[in-house]
Length: 116
Image (cartoon, rainbow, N blue to C red):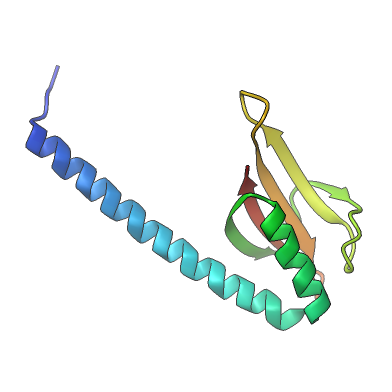
């Protein structure tokens, strides 16, 4: 069995933390680009509905614009049509995660992951 010294372990963890921080920064920048694109496509009323959905969804991530939604349609009163949701509960039953896809005027969908 191979062992690593404390110094080697700390260096491995430092590099992992650094890589994770870079990945999170890149994802945040991508999310900002996607939300700016969505904002440019919809009315203020629709954008407020999207922001409300994001705020109510817990931790949100992986923003993207897709051609086909993932999940099952739900009529939740969204101005542009059914919102598609795929939701799974965690092992304790009190946590949830999945995806939400909201229709856009051009026929595509604003989709994001969530966990709460």
